[in-house]
Amino acid sequence: MAPQQPFRILADTATAQRLVGAMSRRHLLATVGGSAALAAFLAACGGDDESDGGGSSNTTGGTSGGGGGDSGANSLKLFTWAEYDDPDLLASFGNIEITIFNSNEEAIQKLVSAGGNNGFDMICPTGVYIPQLAGEGLLEELDLARITNFENLDEAYRNQTWDPGNKYSVCKNWGSTGWIYDTTVIDREINTWADFIDVAMNEASGSVSILDTAPNLCGMYFWANGIDWNTTDEAELGACEEFLVNEFAQHIKAFDSYPGINLTQGNYSLSMVWNGDARQGLLSVAEAGGNPDDYKWGLGAPETELWMDNWCILKGAANIDACYNFINFILDPKNSATDVAFHGYNTGISAAVAELPPDTPYLEIVYFTDEEVSRMKSGSLDNQEAVVDIYNKTKAAAGA
Image (cartoon, rainbow, N blue to C red; front, top):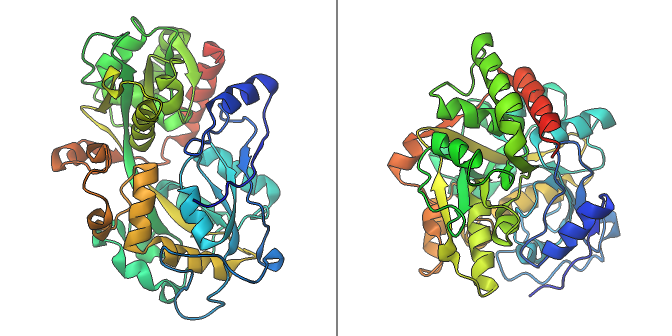
């Protein structure tokens, strides 16, 4: 095991106390709230110019990149989601300093406010936000010839509509959204988003968490009511706002993008959750000696989201060689499998599955069936302004 890296929490006292109580090697949680202070996980070493020059002990594929650049560069600053990469795997690559964001909107706002990369080298945005980032001049155009392991990525996860030709991005992983709940509190099945809403307003009232993102909050309502979650129809958006602000908000305990651990520690009885975080919650119960069967995961129905997060190099990155080396490193099937086992999301590298131990738990939450995938639909930014406004009003009404 690699030595633990130091970390720093930037939060109010109450939030900090809650986070410290939940910390473990596996679980570093970001603060709750769309505009909350960022939680930063800081590596012991800095950028390339501060490296000890000796590299790192590496048993999982090396740090060599494709053609060009410094193949030994292994220090970079990454702006990403919480609990998203195996810290031991990152340490085996080199020195990676991580800063956490809770939502794409928060990340973009931080970069735009800084007028550039804000000292970061890489970012992991969701695909539909890449045109916005590129339009702001924040992303470096990729030289795929320098990423020789790009060929390991399945065709289905290349050349997406929001980034034709992978001009700016390479798939990190993809997933979807559903729910997890405590069956010792909720004794009925939750099979659809309509069921989720009904339980949230009844048995789970005051003990429910919602993902801290505007599209997911509004998506819940649209999916439950058979409405395209990318709708721009003013009447549909108005009905969504009326329901969420005036009827649903009062039942919300927290807006939490990483609820898996909180739920399994008894802080919530019902949570909207991304599939990988649901899996981590169940693993944490088993690790603590509890009974994972007390909790149930369900994929959203009749529709839910399909998202893909991506590796992107920020314009003007100080450690660009290390960025290319890292992307190449993480696209190695063995390294990809190590990361899948940690974060619980499909990396788009089918060869990684064969590298996973056959007893890897909860793979059904990682790799979806064709029927499950058929329920998923990608989001867009067509209604971004409207759903962010609804989110802000709902959050204010909830007081969460």
